[in-house]
Length: 147
Image (cartoon, rainbow, N blue to C red):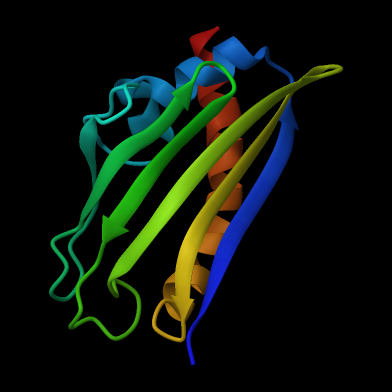
């Protein structure tokens, strides 16, 4: 029996939501905290993240913007991997949701990456969980650098 799981990470960053939004939605900034991409903040825009190939997976994450409500909510599909990869790099059909909420001292940033099906995506889930935590630190760094 398969079950779905989500990775959730959250952190208060000492920046206004609109500044963090720019870091989440500007292609060259995204490349600094995640991966090279051709992102555009428009519902229906199809884009890719690119990383090193693994097994039969070409390293391309296929995405589509599902929801975009600046500077509060960004949601996109996240599909990649290969059916023939039994571990990391296995086929993944998921959704990433970013929520920005103004709080005293900055913005509460929450990311939910949902749709990991166990047991098939268990290794990807285990490997990506700490990675998403580090991504929030990268978003803070890139936002600070952008001024």
